[in-house]
Amino acid sequence: MAPPITLITGAGRGIGAGTARLLAARGHELALGYARDGAAAEALAAELRTAHPGRRVICLQADVADEGQVLAMFARLDAELGRLTGLVNNAGIVAPAQRLDQMELARWQRLFGVNVIGTLLCCREAVKRMSTRHGGAGGAIVNLSSRAAQLGSPGVYVDYAASKGAIDSLTVGLAREVIAEGVRVNGVRPGIIDTEIHGGSGVDAHGAAAGIPIQRLGRADEIAEAIAWLLSDAASYTVGTLLDVAGGR
Figure 1 (cartoon, one colour):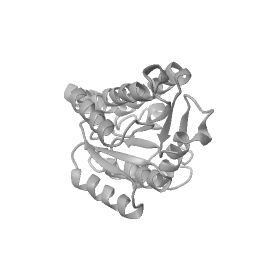
Figure 2 (cartoon, rainbow, N blue to C red; figure 1 turned 45 degrees about the horizontal axis):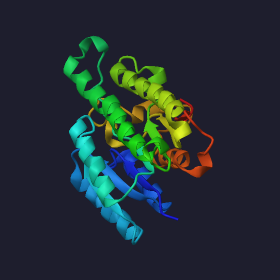
Figure 3 (tube, one colour; figure 1 turned 180 degrees about the horizontal axis):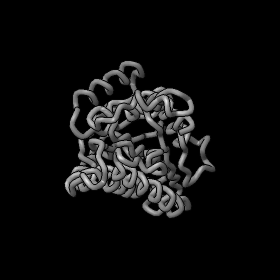
Figure 4 (cartoon, helix red, strand yellow; figure 1 turned 30 degrees about the horizontal axis):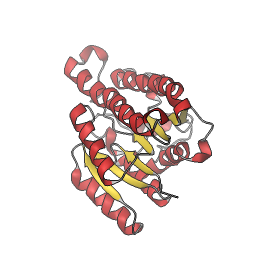
């Protein structure tokens, strides 16, 4: 049986990198999407090829907010790996902590461009390759949302929370739209995870740990386990679900 072929956006660090390591260990051939840090993505690809000899792992650069770059990324994936079977929409950004009445339009345009438009574009291209309507053999999509979508992140970044609320709606709607065509769509809502994403936001992630029922931050590998399960046949009857992995938050 041919191995699964999975694209992970935002794969160079954090949850994306943790997911890549787990999926490679479970037999996936991978396309590691990244926006800017090519060195980190290439280092991860080299690590995975060494750990799993013969496993194909490629790096694909794209700003997912740019349609032309997304189309080029998928064209390279087609040419170098073959027909996609899995997509992990992990690419996402936050901005410095602010109240809404301090925020500027440019911030919202960039944040929604990456977090929402980027996810829409990648979902569209994946469906074109996976759906039986388009000659595909099916597949699975996992969208990364956030507990912020439900909690709202007041005084921190309500715009980020709103962007992830859009991802929740997309996940449920697209799941129902394409399940009869062999494509399963689900999402994961992480809580506060110990990754680099908080570095430029001014948010003290470690300081927030005391307010989480489990009393610690989450790890990237814990989110990766949920993503891997949703991609797998073990989740074959799971459709349009948003799985909270947030330590009780």
